[in-house]
View 1: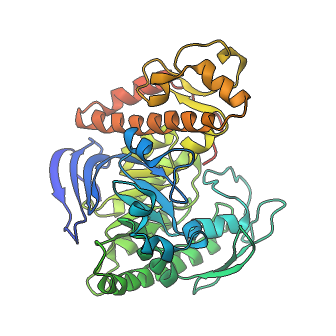
View 2: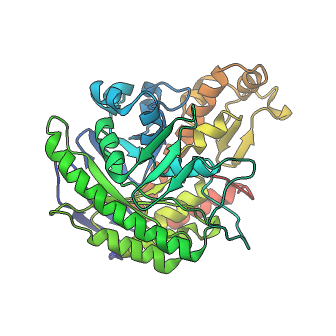
Length: 425
């Protein structure tokens, strides 16, 4: 639902300490700033949410994640269900207490991991699938570990092969036990290789699961009065099809179970990279303006600019920490590989104007040495830099919207930043 541009104050209904207010809106009426209020603190949007899949941002202390400016972290229900168990996290006082994180938390429903790991594609969201269509798609050399039916998904653990079953109700129970401020409804994540007919059937299945999630959420909220209210986001699927994306958004926005609506919306599934902004725009035009929208699994700079412009409020992605562990560091000029020979005697920070802990205390030559020597400290310092780069970029985007300077900031950024020709998510 496109909104008028400029300053405005639109706040959704406050539910148990959760609400969202819109701040400044771009001239296109879609992109905006805002604030998500949660029981564990506020999130100023647009915002990058650091991914701590197993209740940890890999190689980095939670205190360091807070120090680099992250406002919230996201963990995954699939992984924490398998290890250590959502009941353990619940007994510890919830995700934030368990991992010693002082701010808001998100949990993914586990649907993406169940299905993506089940077909062997792991976390690849941006695909090149020209000329391909296959409803039994599976990665080469992989064995199918997940099987979908209308009631849920039966899958084998990627850890030990044990058999498990996720339904909307199971996902809601797990996420309530994990205790995150923001949860996502259980959905089926298709690939871009699935046929149109399968995408239609899957969308109907995801809508039915969304209603079951809302119903289970209502019941669990009534039962678990000892915990703060947890917001539930519906997930918009529909792959690359405009009519399916718009229908999914409208249907989720209208879904009402005993007076319970979704508190916000996730934009999920696989995307054709070149059409990401367009697809986000389709969904955001149909969704209510007074509720936040989270883009799942995206954080590359070009993707963030497109998505913010088209109406996404928050993002999460493992890429900053994942590529850091492979010696790839973000800079304002593009990604660099710190193991390249040119860094061997570079006694300057990785980036001169970077304010992260790594650049303030260490040189590119030292990071080069750590990676070449296979020292674990390399992962920590590189991850701090990449996470700070991503958080800072989205913070700067937010500031540019508030200053009515978004287009200028984007042009200046991409005037320096060298895009990679192929980027996996």
